[in-house]
Length: 183
Image (cartoon, rainbow, N blue to C red; front, top):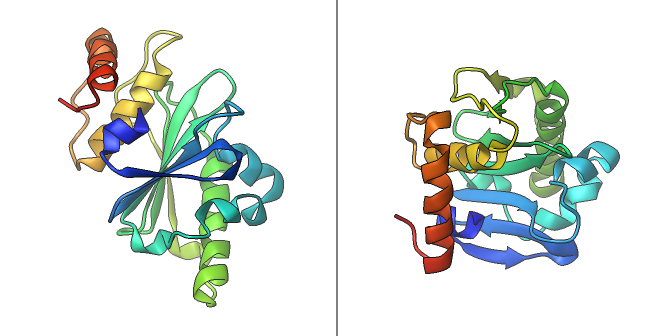
């Protein structure tokens, strides 16, 4: 689905990891194997746990880095915006996950030292838990919300959808996947 949403080529990595890359945007997630996102190894091991996933990618050359976050029974989205040095967490249940944004900031700081051979001040990153966004009103649409957040952010569009749009988005996503095209 991420491949279809972002219309980019996919670079398979070891361990079932999916890295979707374009000229200015990248999505890092798990394309198979464990259902968990990049957040789990990041929290457990830190930079060294994910460094192989981005070894051939200069994260700092991308405007946006989108990371689907799976919390066991719930999907969210984290976005690293290199244009504004901001890491934003999007949760359709309006939850807080400061641990996620801090871990991603620490990853970027370590990645900068590893790839650019220069230290980066962690305070240069703004960490945001977004609360002004369409809210999920049931227990089953979090994945659709996360995909829609990613789609709208990647197109620099304001969020203009609601829970009532989810049945349509589900049908549309199925059609796009089956037909391998975006509407």
